[in-house]
Length: 260
Image (tube, rainbow, N blue to C red; front, side, top):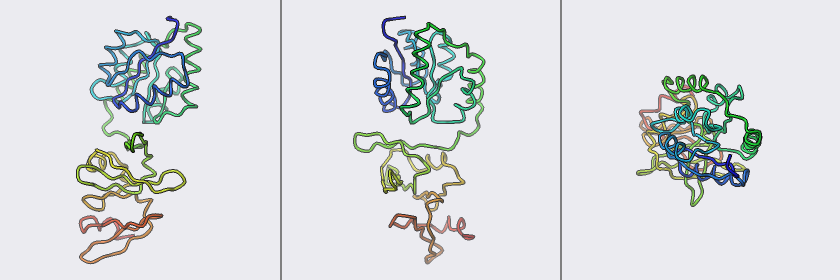
């Protein structure tokens, strides 16, 4: 092993790659990040070139996934999966053969993972044989007909990346080429941000039991609704808890609330 342990980070979100690198610098100062990959294919190429001791791999990446990259790496490095989907962590990693981090990565969990990795490297412990586990996870990813509902939305606020919990969102509204996300931040304070993902793409990823499209440009969190008032011409307005603005309900969507 080289005098200092080395690592590769693979994530298709550059801001999240940088955030994990900063957290690792704090939790594991002697770790050297020798490569950062934008996708699974690049992760495999950079791993072969750099041969790092540890690989932090995002499970879901376009093209070659983090699971496929992990199968290529095999036992040549210690693997840590980074995932936004708890079900993969619970199913695939509960046996303890692999470490995992759930986005957004929290420092106590990262410090626990770092402690285990340090112990394995200090003892020159070989990486676990997890080929069967990876085969099962790859098959699940390939055959999932529908991804899990969106749990987090990433928004650039000034120079900071905000990870907005979907449950905290009050509504989403189309705003020219962007989508306005309105949510309640710390201590219930109302907040808003513009993101580049079109509203139609977000709708397909939201839990239909919790979010409803009520206008061609508006999607509302049903849990945030205080009351609804009927208007003229088979329209209505939605009034939200702890917000002054009212959201329009167009005639096409009024049937959603006829029994409310």
